[in-house]
Length: 275
Length: 275
Image (cartoon, rainbow over all chains, first blue to last red; front, side, top):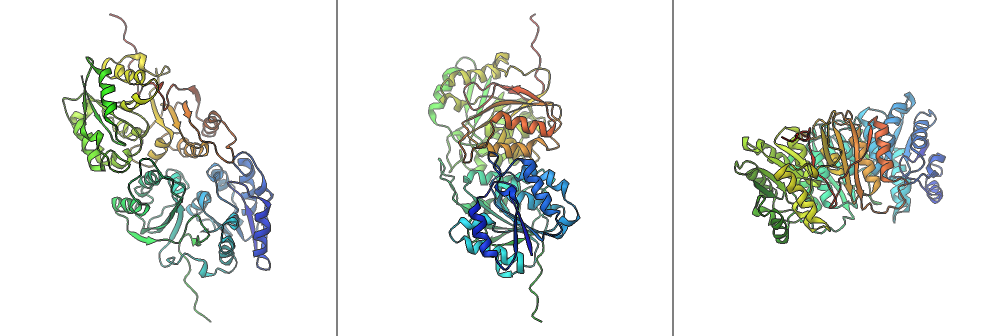
């Protein structure tokens, strides 16, 4: 299996390559696009370079999966160009990432292009426990190992998004219709009043308000605010579920951390019976 | 003239009342709703109290104008309830505020309720030069003094919004159709990558993409980012104007500061000839 790696948002350093390559040895060929190491201000190269690399890898029939190297910020600047550049070979691939990469996952899923999944990225190797996180994604990409999956993934179609990223898909052609889906959400390093504001925008949007329910991943590293927001993260999520009439289904084992599990978008094939 | 003051977002302290009342003496009766001083976590009282106070003052036929006491965060939590509660008397009033209050200004303007204007609020009295800012709004509310206006306000219909607040109106029933309008935007204390992301969502939305142009108010107190974003605020605005084919019309004299000018929403009556 050949896995193409591109960086639609921020760049990665060479140490990520060596450390992740060790884990993939004998399992998959990792094809690190040189764009991953470009630098242009905030971004892993100019918009045209980032879009071009992703289109090139997605349209390469010898590549089986596209793995986003890292999040950060930048996917929303290239998503229009990327969607306009994908050909037939792009439909026969898995795309995997999370965080800022959710912009692209949403856009791909909205167009039913490829198999889309939320999960750990190469740059997660730098976290404590990062080897397990990266191996979890490899286990899914190479073997479709169900042990990599968020444990509640099951009968209902599912998606997973960072909350800010989902809020910024609202009103764009890249927001999938999530009717009937279980929506897993997670957040990192956002003031709670901002998460509250994002959820206000999210839960009542027509493409989202008829979801099957929300599962709450980790809302972590919340900065202290003055005045204190006056509610815990779970209360904020419950508040907006209640206001929108959306069932709250409990926790989701996802987040900006090494425990982040894989969530394939849509319906995931059930476990196969032993032969 | 009677001006009702409510706090749809965060609370104010009593010192604001005394300092602003001095400036209004002999010009207008300020009716400070007790809700302004409530406290509930982040907010000036629970959602129901904030919505109730605004509805009460808006529907009071003895009140001529509704002045938002302060921004912060909270208007998006009550905007649905407020819009559902406004009666006929609410249509014959001016509504003025900015920042978080833009959520309500947008919702009112979308429904053609009252005369809506962006401008300094009572809590601005605490800024250096705050007396001038507050007097500027009183001059507009009491005398429709054109010296209070943002100097480019003229022939085209105009609106003014904080960038984050406008981004969060996207996909809600509270976003006005801004076709043909001059859109003035301002921001405070946001990382540039966030403003970039907000503009990506804003400029291509169908209700916004056919505006007459963008004027850029102050984008101030931008926190340093690592890595540096690699562009100045004006470059960011120009980038998105260019991508969306929206004319960039130059600066706007608005922002989170004491120089913030008044911007009536829609068409402003031209200066009257002397009798």
